[in-house]
Length: 92
Image: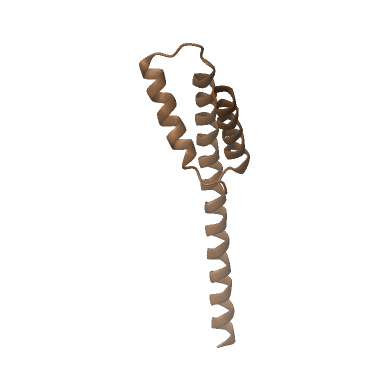
């Protein structure tokens, strides 16, 4: 009985570690995607004149970035929010 419980516990702990590592990897990949979208958003936002396609892309990126959970990429979310605040201050 003790041997079975010990093996089950080791298996359980190994499964937990694998899930944790998979979660970290998923967050890293997600963070890289967000980083690229923030860069693209910044580039489009800084254009002095925008085509209709660029305006739509900017709106789509803003909507996407507004929905990013802050626990996935807190520094990128904070950067995006600071860009939004600057935009509001500039236009408002």
